[in-house]
Image 1 (cartoon, rainbow, N blue to C red):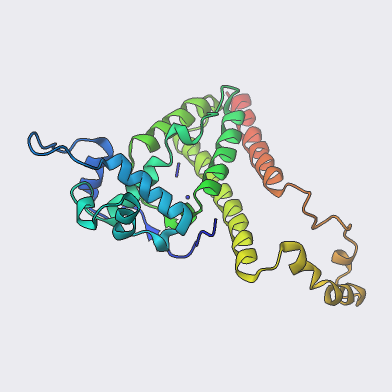
Image 2 (cartoon, one colour; image 1 turned 60 degrees about the vertical axis):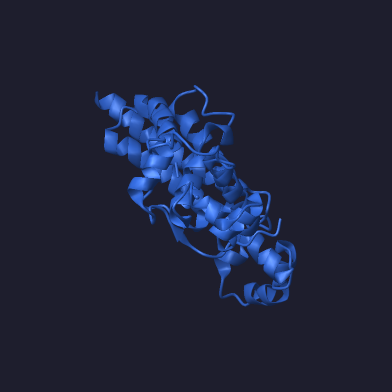
Amino acid sequence: MTSGSSGTGGTETSGSGDIARTLELLWDTGRRPSRGPKPTLTLDRIVEAAIQVADTEGLEGLSMRRVAAELGTGTMSLYRYVPGKGELLDLMLDRVQRPSENPAGLGDGGWRAALEALARATLALYRRHPWLLHVNQSRPILGPSALDGMEKVLTLIRPMGLSDPELVSAIIMIDGYVVGAARTQLYQLEAERRTGLTDAEFWQAQVPTLEKAMASGHYPVMASLSEDAFGQDFDHFEFGLQRILDGLEVLVESRRDAR
């Protein structure tokens, strides 16, 4: 509900532009000129171009000048449609939450299936748009895409029988878990790109030292672990997700029994 050789540095904050103007643009409530030449650009094209720039170059590559170059127009032309980068970022955040970003939807298999699908869809969203992980969205500007998504999820999980704050907290819990997993995956890819070492090569370089450490007797529990304990075949994301859902299921059942 929120999130090539893409850089991932830099941090931006949602809601840092003119909030009133951003809401007008998101909800299409601003005045439209009734006269004058037909615009050569559209707000949709500008937002899509900005997302393309951020996807390929990271947030540090995003600027009004760079978006204008992507569109083959002058920078000042963009200001007829959007006041600045702050407002543009909020439009981008809402755009990537459109249903087209998640064509599979959340299904109709009950609250657990909905939250499970939400987690996977959110992880896929961060993989498509890594720059989302570098936006502070603690105070989001709520546009139609964000509210549509929240409405759909809440409709599917309301049968859990939790209080309204608890329903919202369940969504926040899932999102927080996914953000952590997505950030770890992104950092791994970034480390490989920056160092030129694959993950396997990185750990192989430490094997001689670690073998001596394990043989020292100072780490008996770690030394007793199976060879696949830190293997790449285990799906840590899936394991953690299912345990979160298991915990929620215990809560849901206890509330049902109490009623």
